[in-house]
Image (cartoon, rainbow, N blue to C red; front, side, top):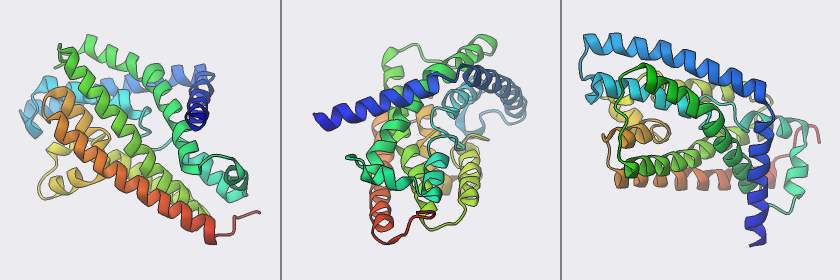
Length: 266
């Protein structure tokens, strides 16, 4: 119970930390809304030429756009979460302080990221999504149970997102400069999550490959659960399997790093 209270407090601290940056949040809301408007118009033109591309009609495609904008910062689809900070702490040696805390490194940063994600969902995700629903014809479900299933998928997506970024951050134990790894994370987040284009619209066999990767658990599957294009149990199973695999890999990588790597700068 003591550990649970500790990590709950860490998550609450992460929420409060991002809530203090009101100007940045307002700028993020504006940016997501503008990009959503541009993408929605682009999708409408594309779906005019290719009706039912990826199995979506126009309303579903536009809804997909606004789900992506709502989850962009929530899931740090192109980075922007804790990973750059952890990499910097590894580079400077400040991570040694983290390792001396009476808390697990992976769970500490997971709790911090959960707080950040929840704030970004409420502070930066809701308004752009609401704007999109008002401006464009969408396929928003009216059944509250569908929304509940979608929220569960989003929570699982948060775990997968954290696990991927934790692995990238830990690469800093071996790299002198983590800039390249962070840039690769950004590129993968753009294309492999379905942020640029739904993965269902990718040509085969590329579509099958990207849908089997963990990034599809972050945006494509939650969106498909909301749009009724994927069954919730199958989506949850896919997300949970990747979450377990990636968290286990992170645990093993953390153990290897703390056993044999000398912290840079310390």
